[in-house]
Image (cartoon, rainbow, N blue to C red):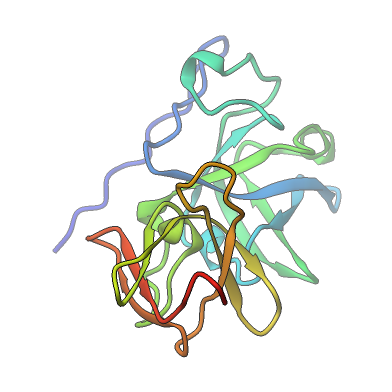
Length: 201
């Protein structure tokens, strides 16, 4: 039987908000208030927002604020939300939290960046991967030719496309469809992806 660690208390007035977990991942932005009782609307970054639903602790940063603790400014709202409810609503998510008692408090959160710990994400199915886990992996073809690390992904609708950046100075990004036909192996522990691809494709 596993013990669940207790939720730490919120900081008292005037104290710094809780530090982001070391594995914090930005998953959404607050887009505004929802209803009159403190509900908030969020725009998740993933088409399937299950990561948001997997944690009852959402960490907040103001828009475009660096993540380092030394850069964290004083905020007029809590740095941590203890989520009471969250569900999909249209193309977004609506939620309520202990620290947001009314519509004014919800409106004040507009633009906040929402982070959760990567360790709280749901376990993906076999052959499914979170984008955050793919970024930074080195990409090679079967002959050992390097395409550089994954620097991002592009959602095209039917599938995603890996963006890799070769090491050569000034080399353009290489785009590789992230589909079974071209991806031979994803080795997360080894930090590499093997693809059936050529540089001149």
